[in-house]
Image 1 (cartoon, protein in one colour):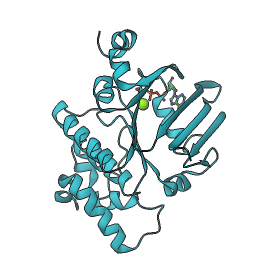
Image 2 (cartoon, rainbow, N blue to C red):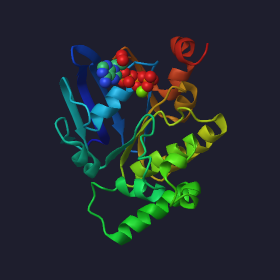
Image 3 (cartoon, helix red, strand yellow):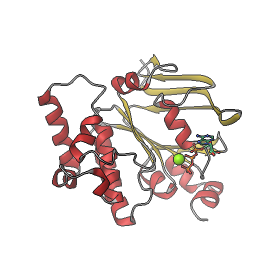
Image 4 (cartoon, rainbow, N blue to C red):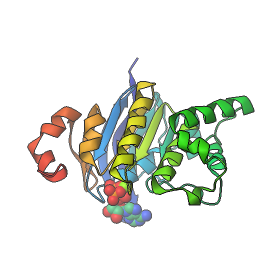
Length: 239
Ligand SMILES: Nc1ncnc2c1ncn2[C@@H]1O[C@H](COP(=O)(O)OP(=O)(O)OP(=O)(O)O)[C@@H](O)[C@H]1O
Ligand SMILES: [Mg+2]
């Protein structure tokens, strides 16, 4: 049996006549942290949204837990065990923290007790969310909204959690705190696929990385190796 949780082969994605992703292949093994590194517009978000069944493929194959999910709808992908914290957080502004979190469990048929224990898990990870439970999401700070978006994705009990730009627009100190929580989730058994502008931070915590440039994977390997690579350093790590 293969330990590959996710296997993507020759994936292509178009926006109308524009090809945003061109024949990319990558995989994620159980227990890993894998990161995409790439500049603005490289195609990280497009790839994540396609994995979650939000964008249609133009070609290629996606397999999750050995099942072909190439044409699967979003709710089925969530139910299988893949959920996403999207770029820009996308919390529901007029819903409370608690209501936002419960939305993350919508695809699962859960009892009240199960939902309660999932909420507790999120509150253990992000105590701030417990304090703000009855507050509308719109009143949260950017960093708190990021915690909420991650918490909402966790409510789906993912085996593979996709995190798109968890550090976007957040103060460095809070970014470090959130990344510490992300590392903790991984230690507890959640596999992670990460897209991050902050390549240094992402590669520092990841096992492996893929470098995306204008919709193509131009380099891949152990994160340590990418951190030491001269072309990666020049392009993404400031020299
Ligand atoms: N809805 C859309 N319609 C048309 N083109 C789009 C759309 N969304 C993204 N694109 C284009 O697809 C390409 C990839 O964008 P994408 O958002 O996936 O990049 P990214 O790597 O996530 O960038 P960033 O680091 O800025 O988040 C870009 O050229 C972008 O302009
Ligand atoms: Mg993006």
